[in-house]
Image (cartoon, rainbow over all chains, first blue to last red; front, side, top):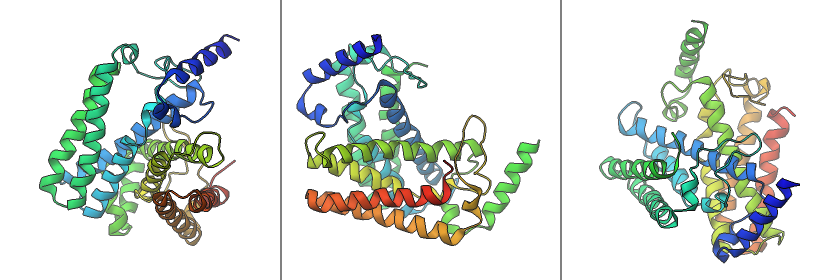
Length: 159
Length: 159
């Protein structure tokens, strides 16, 4: 019952948001599903960042096709509309899903806009750099992507 | 100790594999990590497939930018070199990670090649169809992507 009320309120809040955010929202996404989906995006991104790191630091041979595949995957995750996976209240664990999202995410919209903008720009830049196949261009773009990830972690992720 | 031996043997087996597979392999990826990463890829793909489904069946308004973002994300996941996340022995649960991969995955290489080829081709086709912005082209490509997913589930995923 409480859960139904919570969901009804969440839906009401979503209806107050902009059309662009709403268009990204799959209907009836449950509180545990938004956490599960967004965490999956970051975990998969981790793998691709680890591959890039290994190829850029020489742990494994540099392979420009693999660099491009990893960077394209990262960019398409970053720019997939993940904002829709952060509905109000989703700083609370739900079902079997735990989240480290800080409640400040919902009280500091300007800071969210700042870190999200840097994140999306870094993804776009990384994919463009990877397309050149030039490690000298890819390395700084990779570093900037890492900084953009950290920017959000520092502001909105619990330790 | 047993785990170290298992990892040494896994590394030895990987060294016998082709250079292209090896190039995709982050060094020292642990047995639980390969399961965690591959499952994350499929979970995130689920979200994007659900978004496409909702826009194609009219549950939410069709938005060609969102369709393109979802299809691009799916295709870049499909074609990210996920084969590297299926080392020998990874049909066994590892650490906290559970897997539904059937052992047949490692004894039916021709079938793996068939389902993996269909999967990658469907991803490429879906992204190309999404780029047209035409639902009449996107719908069959989405259906084919779903069939390609199911093809692997039917052959190699436990219920």
